[in-house]
Amino acid sequence: METITHSGATTLPPRITKTFVDRLTAMVTAGTAGDKRDPYEMIEVYTGAVVGELPQSSPEDVAAAAAKARAAQREWASWPLARRLAVFERMHELILSELETIADLIQIGSGKTRRMSIEESCDPPMVISHYLKHAKRILKPVKRGGAMPIIASSTEHHRPKGVVAVIAPWNFPFAVSMSDSAPALIAGNGVVLKPDNKTALCTLYGVELLRRAGLPDGLVQVVCGAGPDVGPSLIENSDYVMFTGSTATGRTIGELAGRHLIGCSLELGGKNPMIVLDDADLDEVVPSTVFSVYGNSGQACMHIERIYVHERLHDEFVRRFVAASEDLGAKAGASYDYEPEFGSLVSTDHLARVAGHVEDAEAKGATVLTGGKARPDLGPAFYEPTVLTGVTAEMAHATEETFGPVVTIYKFTDEQEAIRQANATTYGLNASVWSRNLARAERLAQRLEAGNININDGFVASFSAKATPSGGIKQSGVGTRHGDDGLLKYTDTIHVGVQKKQVLSARANMPYPKQLKSTLISLRLMRKLRIR
Image (cartoon, rainbow, N blue to C red; front, side):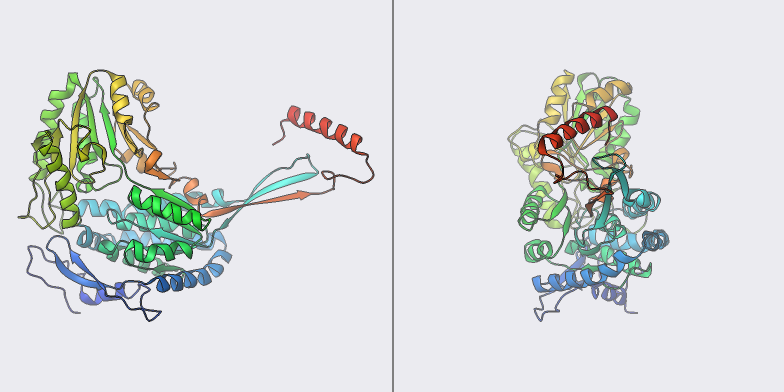
């Protein structure tokens, strides 16, 4: 097989051959309507070297992909749930068996560290494991009482919506694409999956694994292209949309979904705060905060961008955290092994955005305690772990999502003021509180405006709990993933009511005054009996 070579500082893993890449990219639905578009050149982020060409889909291609998924979905939905779950039993093991290859593909497109790539690869098995255990309970019809005891009954059923559009981001491309597609498929839907062009290879490999696990041909389709080119057609031809990405794009998707009267679930941006109370244990706070801020090089929707530290601990926290940030930066590198502990940003364009926020803050009076510089010696898109102080409201980093390895530390005296500042944002995705007193931390958490709140952790405690729904409030999203809701959102709720004897409608043999009297007696009896 022909290998992919380049003259950069890294060598592609031997598993990633040209034949392998071509096999994956051939899975994209593109050019079916004669509208063949120029392919997208996929690069290895570490060097900028081209690793393959990704076909780009037209609106007609998207419609064709949705039609194929819809045709296959009819058969899939007819399978007993146990048979569908058996596919995901196999998928669970296939992912675990192929972790190293998946990690290779994640690193090529995103530039993240090996450890982070492996951790990302483990998210879909966690989600699949949860639904393997609970899908039968969640999707089981629920029989309830009707309006009249014994005579009437009511049953809640859940049917698949049909075709679900899953639009995955570049920051966790394998985790999000597979973890969002799995419950949609388990519920009986077909899926049209749109990965980001930059990180499509790992998603395509995930689809290949699904097919190897026994998913019917055609059930999952992949389309690729810029959002404005393929997004409208994708939504027009789907019955539900699952999107993870920016708030701005989420608004556009929500508007299009509303126009077509279909549902959507949107996990959007965040400007996530952490509050360190005066009794917190810095021996625990600092190491965890390093990951909460710099994990995935800060490119995580739930990562911390604002830290509020009580004045009693502020100076010592700053000293320790700056030292830890510098230590992490010294362990940055471009490699397919486990040695580097800090990786690249996803692209030079994104590096320019992150650097722009830091430069804007510094120009307007903020102080850079450490970092604040690109590292072209490591790769085209590396940027140092960066700590700022003195950030004020007119600076972009104060209110906008930077989405990089940049954090601001603020000092507070009054706990109420810390809460006010933490909530002073249009976002509401994640928040963190640190205290030795759990009851105190929980009371404070009740006042924070976020869909996920972590006590004595940055974000892992909530996001790793797959049994509990997770999502954003305010401008951070609509809907949730995980838990019962994460499966039921891909279904239509169907209500079947049964009457064994006709007693609820007007009866010709009973005068209306008598009907009214009977109705009033029934309503009072129902309240006393607490009939559902």
